[in-house]
Amino acid sequence: MDTKILRNMSYGVYLVTSVDGDRPVGCTANSAIQITSNPATVAVSINHDNYTNGCIKKSGKFAISIMEEHSDASLIGIFGFQSSKDVDKFNGVSYEMVEGVPVFPQTNGYAVFKVTGSMETSTHTIFVGEMLDGAVTGSGTPMTYAYYHNVLKGKTAKNAPTYVEEKEDLEKVTDTDGKTKWRCTICGYIYEGDELPADFVCPICHATADQFEKVVE
Amino acid sequence: MDTKILRNMSYGVYLVTSVDGDRPVGCTANSAIQITSNPATVAVSINHDNYTNGCIKKSGKFAISIMEEHSDASLIGIFGFQSSKDVDKFNGVSYEMVEGVPVFPQTNGYAVFKVTGSMETSTHTIFVGEMLDGAVTGSGTPMTYAYYHNVLKGKTAKNAPTYVEEKEDLEKVTDTDGKTKWRCTICGYIYEGDELPADFVCPICHATADQFEKVVE
Image (cartoon, rainbow over all chains, first blue to last red; front, side):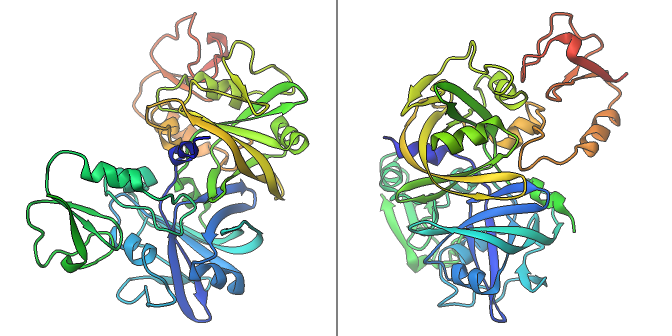
């Protein structure tokens, strides 16, 4: 059985948000689908270990904002590679509150949902929600997960439904064109170049140069 | 509230199959996501009106095959714009039986699942399944729904979770570049040209020339 076939399913890249009392929380997600258009309903899969999971359960609400190819990629790193338990991911990030949930109009747009059902698996909760409000706020091309992976060279967060240990990807990095490469130890972003500039900041997760390691020389 | 934002979510294009007793059945779907990688689990949303829905409930099994950009697009039309109630969709189509479910190795690959959970909405059932078997059988680029819509000019089947009446698309067709256009009355495919050849066959659904209507002159 080759589970790698599941890596060839197609996804978008989303910021999934909710609230912890009054405090905005959120994470990145790719596993989101529309379930029906009447009433407008989606499902999204969120890891039990994501702080956002418990906040959706308590508040009964969540929102998705849809990343565009040219949206600020650091949103993915900020929301995808650290926990709302430890940091205020919204510090310095522009957002609006709609129906009591934070959303990002600087993306392609957003939709806010009330939870109408959920189902548990061993690692993830599938939340089903009916749309309360939403808007198209951008006009660019929605980012696909393939674009994130292949063009932005982004990695899969450990809590993602589609995460598998990326040993093969590691081999791909160390086994190729002889160029010197540096990898972000936070999000996996690869920088190509003989020297990593001392003031370099990871475009995905805002990690600084000292958080990069040389992976090919 | 602008539900159009949900049209900007990203999907693949899948053939979802099952069995009616011994008889293979299937339909197209775009709303499918991985839920967790351990054990490999997906969710797929299937309309109550799809014959395949009841067959998945009875058999407890389904498979997805992943369309590539260069897969034979007629598979989408054959499986997406008619019902297994009325026709044998598998007549003339190459398939294999894996774990008792038909799959299509001529696509990017397939995965077979046993149903481990389901949830009902007003129009669709969300089936959750654990992977039993699967294989990568192609090496092309998986087809995204955006590719199907924008490049192949395919339409959304009425039973899809993402279906909305495409009045706007109709306006887009009739309100543009002055070229003569013909629309397939079965699947909505648009042919551009002054004359539709008498032996023309729709590349999406295999409809014949007499099933096309002139929409712009």
